[in-house]
Each structure stands twice: as C-alpha cells, then as structure tokens.
Length: 257
Image 1 (cartoon, rainbow, N blue to C red):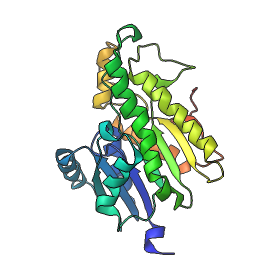
Image 2: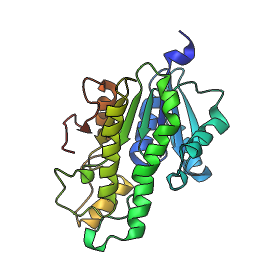
Image 3: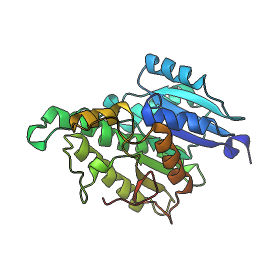
Image 4: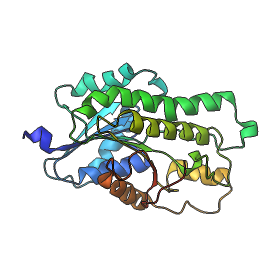
C-alpha cells in the first residue's frame, strides 16, 4: 500500500471560518491526514494559514488550500478546475468530502423573504453543494469507503421545524437534506456514505446572526470545539449500515427530515 493510500484525505469547504476552521485544525492534528480546505480568496487563505500556524500538526499531515466561491460554482467543472489547477499531481483520491461552506443572511418570516434571498441561498447552500459532489465524485470513488458529509441545520427540517422563522436559509438547507438522501439511495452499489449533519447551534458568525434575528438573549449554547468534537465523532463512525442516508445531530441523535 502506498503512502498516499495510507493517508486519509479530507476536502472541507469554507475552511477558514467557524465550524469548518475547527474541523480543519482538528483533523490536521491527527497523524497521516491530508486536508484540502477551500476558501473564497487570498485574504481568507492568509487567515487560514495564520490559524494553522498556531496548530500542532500531526506527523505526515498536510494542508492544501484551494479557491472556491460558492456563488460561482454553477457547474462541476468550476469546482474541478479549482482543484486540478494546483493539486492534480498531489491528490489521487478523497476519502471524506465535508460540505461546510454556506451563507446565512436571511432568517426572517416567509412572508417577507425576497426572491433574491431565495436565489442566493439556494445557489450557495444546495445547488453549489450538488455541483461540488459531482465534481469530486471521481476522486471519492478512488477511496475504499467514500463519505460525503453535508453540514446542514435543524432549521431545514420539514417534519420538526424550529419554532422560529427560517427565511431563505431554512428551505435551502431542506433542499440540501433531500440531495443527501438521494445520493445515499442512488449510489448504494458504489458504497457511498452520505450523511446530513446538524452541528448544533454554535457560537459562530452564522449562529449569532440567527440569535440576533430571533431576539435570543446571549450567545448560542455550543462552542465551536464542542460542535467539532461531536461532528467528527459522527463522521468517524459513519458507514452505510449506521448513519448513511440519515439526518444526524452532532450529539449522535437522529433528526426528522
């Protein structure tokens, strides 16, 4: 078995912010782990590199940075080019795709949610996510157990909606959840593990945006570290027989679609 095959390779979108940044740093602390983190621009890349400089990186672990703006990912080729332009010689497979990048700028009542808000949220939070999967599926197929993890939200649940408004964010996450379940069903023979993971209500910029929109006093209840620890536990234990095709919370409980 080659050194490349021994390493576990992750691709994480939105790698310089919030939960995604927490996942990048936590995974890099493990030995023999390759992390590909997507960021929007050079400023975001510098921020990520600064954070990683403070992290204890595991033996034989390494970070690669690629540039992806979800607003521009309207086809698989856009995402594929971002990877191939800089990493074609280094990356032969992806074991785990973690779609964490998203936008959250609309959490008001449905009665006042605009067409523009719906379009921008669906592009970033569902359409681009499917394009990313299509782009990287050939590399996932080269893994012994490919996993596609969508960081979603309980705000996207239809059967157990939160008692707060969800604006355009909620329905865009509901669409993402549908895609997760569909990929699980369509790619059963290929052994894909496809899971939607709710990271909890976390002390991130997005989490605070929701808190302010809902007039919630104080900060969201979960720290990034608490969320990341739970999310990684779900990912590490994910298989076709356990949580594939399901909507899971960071704490291991199954949520209602």
